Image (tube, rainbow, N blue to C red; front, side, top):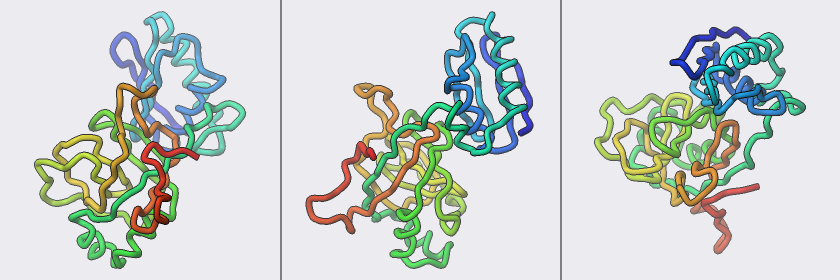
Length: 228
């Protein structure tokens, strides 16, 4: 694992890495039993981990801990189970595959609609990092056949609950907002709620399974809040 440590204001250290897998592994180590003293928060990015100190005096220790973790990385991108924070419980998201771009995704991938749905639901996705809007998670690790480009013309408004694909990612819009992802479905899952602790339904390193509402037995839909 290679990394570059950069100052981030007077209260944080930004660790730049080569890949999302490296960022996930480092985040798991530094938020687990080896969590360094004075670490207030560790924020994942696509190839970065931002280490926020409770006070500036803890910054040297955070830098040392990050350098040590980089020098002896875990073998798994999810971290060493003996030293990493356990990932969140898996979440199941029921989806109605009625998105306006489903036919376009079929054209781009060469798959039928049933095959697109099967590919989206048959493989577990991992929450790589959050961004864009509260509750929005960039999901990775899905079926590589679903890798499609963003729309050439973004929409001015994408409805909350829209499930989309873009490049290697899948994601769910937590609120009405502009967006350029290819929309394949909708869900009633609540991605962000201040009445929940933590507010975000999907958290870094968590596993997400999409389920097809149309294929669920009568009365047997998975609850939007997910679980094992």
